[in-house]
Length: 198
Image (cartoon, rainbow, N blue to C red; front, side, top):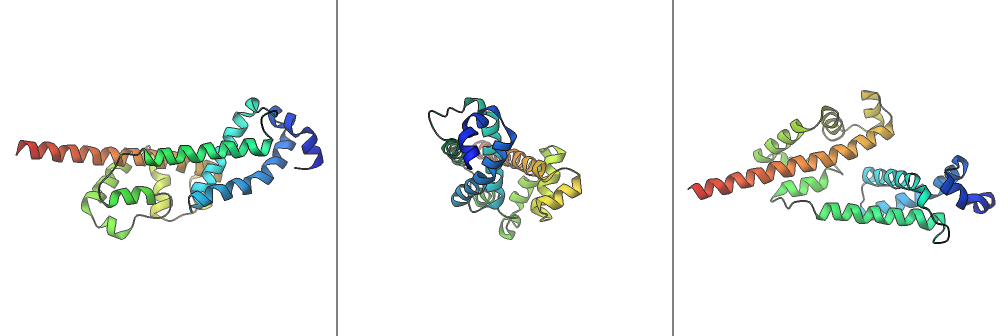
């Protein structure tokens, strides 16, 4: 940070001074992105986690205590917490048998692999999960993963900002994972019940 930012930064961070925050984030965002991309080689996810970290920092600025850490260490701490949350979210997901588990982990990176699409059960589950999503979430997922559009292209297509596209994609992926896992859990339970009846 500059001398002015060093001198007034601590107070400016907690008070939400826009100039201090602008300079602070211009230096921190590339570092935060580097942290996330080292964990997951997925630019979209890294960008979303950067946005979440910045949002969490701005929202929690009143809790910043300069006696405990510099602003840089404080925001890195928030980023590390978001890494832990993302890891916990991924490891706590229901175990799903077969290639669909691979697909759930790939949804953040690339379109559905052909070998997975060839499986009728998977196609059925994907369609069922998509059908249960809100129309905005369904549309943005189809645009991103089926049409291969960038966030900028999607923003132009549906008339919202790129930032809003990333936010919508983040929510849509969470909803999709929950729905597809629910579908496979239900299918597994139905198969078990069928076996018991036989």
